[in-house]
Length: 107
Image (cartoon, rainbow, N blue to C red):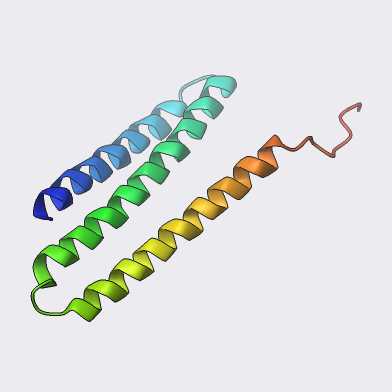
């Protein structure tokens, strides 16, 4: 469990730093490229969020598994629910982006 904590925590930190560089770099690019960088940064940020959740759960499991099973169960359920809510929001956003626009673009 500790190795899982180390790997997911390192991946989350790597993703967060990568998002920081992408967003900083997007300020110096043209509009179209900047939007693309920001779009990719959001996806990387989601990966960082999920990795942070897994790192937190595995860290808690590593340090208190022998003392308090009920606390581990509660933390695992809450973190999993947070991850599911985030996934549902991302899926809903993806579906809404696929729908045709209702705005009148003729001018």
